[in-house]
Image (cartoon, rainbow, N blue to C red; front, side, top):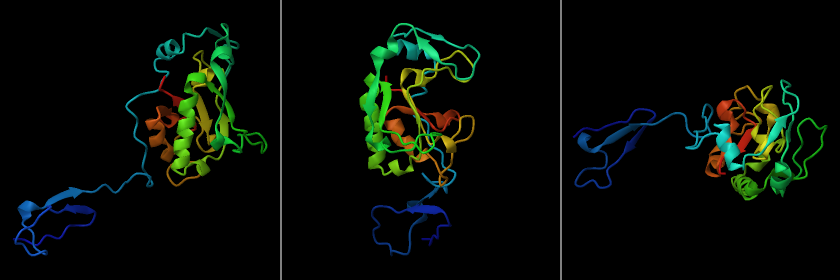
Length: 224
């Protein structure tokens, strides 16, 4: 018999039953050691795991098919965030207001102190999904960490291209944009505006986080 002293940062798993052995002695063959990671969930350096599903707009053709293949045109080709115009009335039929009480009173980004009233325009079949998401965030006591609301339905292209954004179809929304600008690494754990703690719950509700491609303010619904 050998007395074993586990080193720092090691977890010792004891057998469920030890017969006829003093508590301070253990057979080496009956002791299992396992290295314990020094980076735990929500500690500095932690990054949310990707869900099993991917971004709903990759490929775009799949998203468009699920939405009924809306017809649209880019109004100012080549312009940054050019508006798009639906030519078949798709938005009128499929976009409507849904009240998200957790966003009521949240400041609107770059609106001189104006606060959002909670009624956001979103894709009708996803109303229940977004309500459930914010209720889950509220249950997890994360809502106070929502510092600003940047918007949801906004028919436009991505950057200066011709590909419509998920916002065009009312299936995405942005929060905490100042701290998570597009094209930059999202705010990390412990930093103001960080949204990483929101992501595991978003995954459960089929919302894909834009932080996986350096757009940390962005969440898009992938449960269509």
